[in-house]
Length: 515
Ligand code: ATP
Image 1: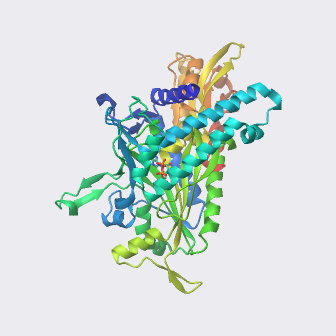
Image 2: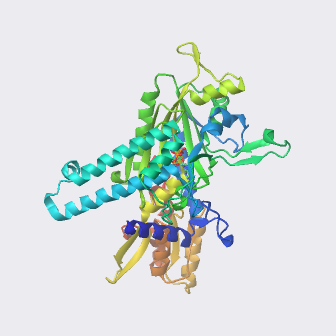
Image 3: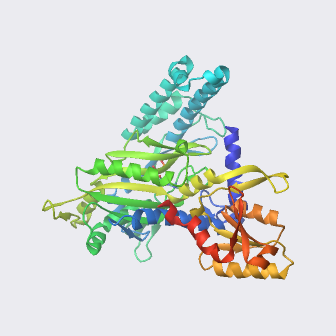
């Protein structure tokens, strides 16, 4: 556990030190769960968005894009169910005055039992060595079996309390499990009550309740209300999708874990409109397609898994998460939901406008069913960053060992594609040639020119921000117009002619390689 904590702390420190993520308004001591993306962060984030957009919109002729406003007519959120049901169960500790999500307190209790299981398994592995059969151990070891049963029972009970909205039951469960405030140990709890996660603000021209606006808690509703606009103007036929990237806002009760849970964040969502009755086929299709999108980045299979929802949201008839193994454990990275016709139906009812599609094949008008893929851009950023950061021992050309912090980002996502480094800063012929190369390459990629240190130091700096290629201009360059191209991961250096640089780097770093 503490190793995991250390790794996570290192990641947060690295993100700040190297200009990826800063706490918001830091000079005023920050703002809870709000973050700013720094000079390299914004480039990495844009590349993640570009990868998503191209694989969803550019690669599918039946998916079109949209950029809806953050503010929407307040009735939108009535229809979507967010005004009435977008709540988390809130509980306060009377002594510490700290607020918690009641369900997360129970989750925390379950995680402690899970940790006990892992401890037993680790002990077993140590004791049995080579002959250890983990599956058999988990299925037969009496204590592990008892813990597993306890976990399953608790999950079931929590799931049904949540889906029934049984707040008194939730409080009773917290008392039964004797759960204390994780920070102070106090058990002096208030009742559990519902807390709506939407931020509200006021429209200037209209006073009172009538002018109350919400900051959207998901981008999806902008897609639903534009469903016919997008379909008609692009002459799409069902099945087709609408994709959108944009900010969403949730007044999360407990926001921890850096950019994993933020109050202002960005979503990349796609709603796929299908003929009713075919939704499960498309649900399976998008499950697989989205998982492959993650794997194409080179993410090891054991760091990704599906997790079916125990209790379904009010709008869904099937839902699964793609979970990623963050430094603090497996957590939701993306959701795939079969949303039925719930949203379009409610909008039709509340607006009085028809939201039906005329199917030329069946000659029928109907409200389509929707399969949604929804991924948090910031969570994806965290997944990419945490998968990439490594500390390595390396040897220089004379065999001297040193360590480096390196971000092994997929080349197509790296903020800076190449750095152009003169071997000696005081040698004008070298710096001038390096500048010329930079001025040429910057037209094609984000690159950097750097002559502010020894070559070893410059390499380290580029490793730390994940630059996949370093170009070194040395004395041989002046003789034959070749440079060395250093690969971040293999540390191999090859000599190539200057006039091939652009095509070689573009080939190696193209987003196309991922599509
Ligand atoms: P969680 O259970 O973690 O609160 P959720 O199930 O409410 O997430 P969805 O409503 O399905 O999340 O939103 C889709 C995606 O948006 C999530 O998979 C996640 O990547 C992202 N997301 C949701 N809430 C946040 C948040 N507070 N900060 C950052 N990303 C978020």
